[in-house]
Length: 114
Figure 1: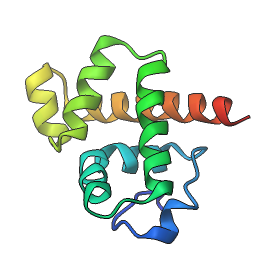
Figure 2 (figure 1 turned 90 degrees about the horizontal axis):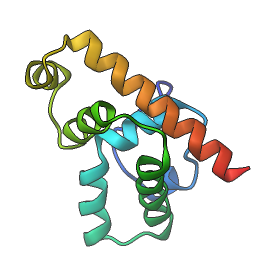
Figure 3 (figure 1 turned 180 degrees about the horizontal axis):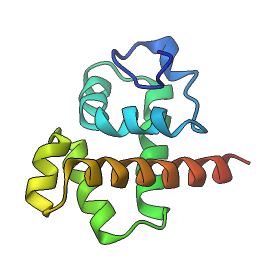
Figure 4 (figure 1 turned 135 degrees about the vertical axis):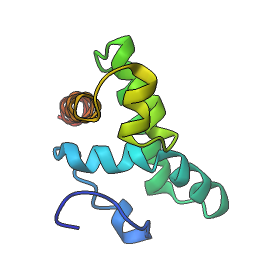
């Protein structure tokens, strides 16, 4: 788990999410819909809290329309390469958008938790 990405959900993981790490946010965003399905079958209060936090961060962070579009495609499971082709930018450009978006979300969440 050193990279911050979430690879396999489990109950103890939900209690120790570090919103200050934008890579953690990126992992949560990447698996957002899978986590929602997981919660539908195995409700977990900590996971519900995380999903609500992510929803709020997406809505309240100062994101451009392009950032929101890229983020939505990323959340739906599109690869950075496919997103780039659809949007008309390089895979590296998509990666930068995702990183800056997750950083903005992390900054928002850390400000909201203070």
